[in-house]
Amino acid sequence: MKGVALTGLEDSRQTDIGSRPQPSASEQSPDHPVAKAHLRVQGRPSPPVFRHAPAGDLAGLVRHIWVPVWDIPAGEEWEQHVLNYPCCQVVVGSDYARFYGVVRGLSRVALAGRGWVVGIGLQPGAGWLVAGRSVSALTDTWVDLDEMGMPWAALVPAVRSVMSPDPSDALAQRRAAGLVEDAVRRHVVIDEEGLLVNAIVDAVEGDQSLLRVDQLAARFALTERSLQRLTRRRLGLTPRWLVQRRRLHEAADRLRRGETDLAGLAAYLGYADQAHLSREFKAVTGHTPATFRATATRADPAGDQSESTRSMQ
Image (cartoon, helix red, strand yellow):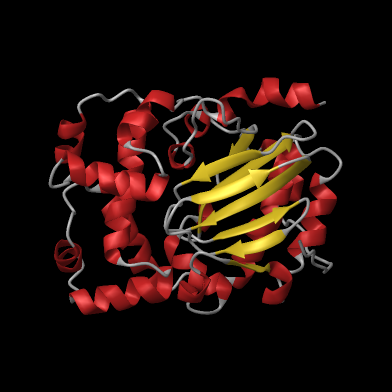
């Protein structure tokens, strides 16, 4: 995994970092959007995950910040399964630093040894601005931050110098996240089209009645073709994918809570029938709804972070 180089990036808010709030209970709960995206099942461990709220002035650009820290016994590998949101990510870790496009299927990440990651989930409309190109070429893949030039390459040594002494330290995590936030703040300005993309994704994620592309296009006074072009360029995705992903997130969450009425769940989510839900769920996650419900756990790595962190020290 390639590293990166650069100097001179400071967090302009670091003098106030001690006053920034710690992750709230809602940010650590299984109801948090990041927690919902993780498909956690019995027998597949997850590392502690620290979550931090983005700075308020970056609401249009940054959606969430997460910091997993792991120390996995020798010879073991913990594979994490995630259903991505329609958001690109800037990730700086102990061993790699990358800009990620959206994974359309199931994202699988194998963890081994000891390490950490500072991850910044961008708002849907911000990925194109950070990448400086259509993100359609980055769907299902990633690019090293050093290949993106300044200021993104500069983040790698800066973040690592802050995180390396103690990755589980909340103030170090805040400062490291602040470095990435400052790079976004200084070099990215959300545009009108980006705000429109954010609104489109918010509408899909928040309105269960939006089931068809023509409905979504009408909501925003767009033609279906214009909507398709927009989401392809700015997200690397189709409008239909947005609807499907919302339904899969909701299905996984309800199954995790023990939902037993699969026919009722299918109807609630707008599927033609239970078989349609089962086919789509298995095609993406590898599990049928019934098998996922039987093995899924609502335990959130963020909820156990204190105990897990102590065990690593």
